[in-house]
Length: 281
Picture: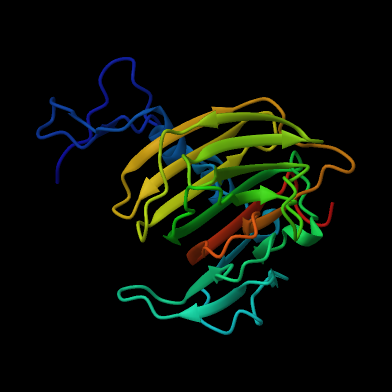
């Protein structure tokens, strides 16, 4: 039986050391301060706190939408709404459950497609951590030569028209240009150019993470291999308080009455809300 050796000055409860190779040589365990805190946690709730997870199921809500069913049967009150366009399930090789949002080629203005809860905004940022992921890809880029359109993805309250969201923390591309990270409160915004251009049929995962007090928001772009392409931390114009509620989702709109399609394929969305205390509160 190997001998446990605790060198001078090391308490018997300190998990930094393991069983030694002999009676006098201690073997160090490769573990950092957070790992020691995890090992020393007194119960499962304390372990979850060390890992930054919810202490129990009543502290968090999560919904993942895979779009495996009709777009009229989405979970968690997500809705599919269009003005002149179409949202329809399609088959994409190597992917499960995708929806193509397309404004179509009819020469009428303000053709819009929405998927999410942003038309009935009810998420209060600053009331616990709010996280959102969306994986998708544009399928038809906005053309030049007078065609104007926008894509909004994230937390926002974009209407079923061409008006910019009043409030939100989201990614925005205008007229097929670069993705911008945007924080917007009561129509006052901070916007940062990511330098990442939307590319046809090139899937990106967009991650938005607003801290519990809504004093900071991290917005990240990953490619389909999971490589981080861009990361921004924003601290101004994050909407909070009465009247500043947001929803979550995707909105595409072709503003001009030009017969050019503007389409986006959505593969997966994820919403996670971590509450400041156990429900009910």
